[in-house]
Image 1 (cartoon, rainbow, N blue to C red):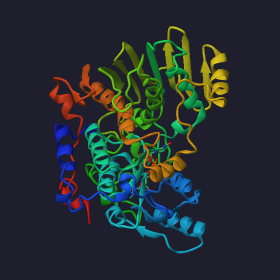
Image 2 (image 1 turned 90 degrees about the vertical axis):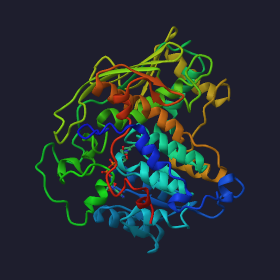
Image 3 (image 1 turned 30 degrees about the horizontal axis):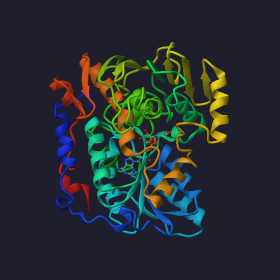
Image 4 (image 1 turned 180 degrees about the vertical axis):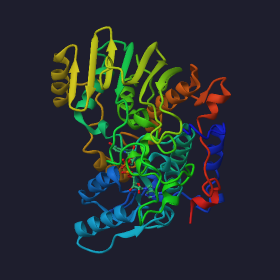
Length: 456
Ligand SMILES: NC(=O)c1ccc[n+]([C@@H]2O[C@H](COP(=O)([O-])OP(=O)(O)OC[C@H]3O[C@@H](n4cnc5c(N)ncnc54)[C@H](O)[C@@H]3O)[C@@H](O)[C@H]2O)c1
């Protein structure tokens, strides 16, 4: 979402840009045999990490803890993060083999890398992910899937076309309490769900200790700020919208709504994919109508993302969903409501109107007694590696991550336009509203607006 510089370019711009044929951008169109399941890697899975800041450091730790993969390359545009991560990898393996890159295109061009882990800021997910898919890599990428809806649509297409394994950083699906909650809902304990409440944080949080509204300055030594900005609009360097705190400016992130939508709306959707009374299938779940209100700081504020918001969605099967930040009556996490009661889950909290259900789902799981039993993850990174070998889809494939973030992007667009949006979830189109449709995309800055610069 680009609040200040929307050229009403529409979804077509990014899709057209991303949709260049593999041949046109220099990748072979032949799909490697192992992609088709014939020859899963028997050796260690080689991994390259792109973006090793806050979450990227944590993801790197996940890979380093698993013996059947080896991190062979790190890319970051900040020398401090880059050198720290390379040092950590080399210390872990007791060698000097991990290579450092400041340009992700060079890492992706390496033929000996099986998988990449993308933990860059939101404005930098789509291009590396699409390039990695087209280069035949499997991909672990952070939530929210993309910075705009058009990017998300393009990412899904690229991953499917190239038959890549994809895991999203929506790790809550790998946690037992979230799985049990979704299992209870899918198994009909509530009856037909009528309402879902998704509670997300409000305001801003100073994650980097940089404060809000510092004056513009010069990038720290060792930072390639041109590459950090990438496809986003070039703005003067400002320490308050750099590492971690970029998420509070729409040029790079989507505020609390988009920071959390890939976690709690993802779980809310998980409960709703029951074919009998939900909104499934899970790769097509989506609202029919979205309206929203939000409180925004000034457009040119350093932290300009909504501080309070309320998104009201109408889903198929007469299910209403509210996604809110800053409304005390909407509890944090996901809450499903039906004729038989309610179930609510958040980090560190799993409650229900009938607490017997919580005991029951765990007891039934132990004896394989659940009619609908969801996959029990061995751990989020572990599951990704297992899927690379089996070529079976992960718990959070790209199409699910995209559907999980869609109500957030639509909510932002509805709040900005002040209109109720009609959403065609099958075609992924806003119906009859050209100005809102234009906000599904944002301008891509040169040189990234020219597809030939996406690879080296
Ligand atoms: N799954 C979770 O629980 C979770 C938690 C926090 C953040 N995240 C997500 O992780 C992503 C990163 O967030 P963060 O808080 O770690 O941000 P961060 O600012 O701490 O780290 C981002 C890193 O990416 C690097 N970077 C920027 N542009 C780059 C480029 N072109 N090539 C290589 N490196 C580049 C930065 O220098 C920095 O080291 C975001 O998408 C965020 O939403 C997920």
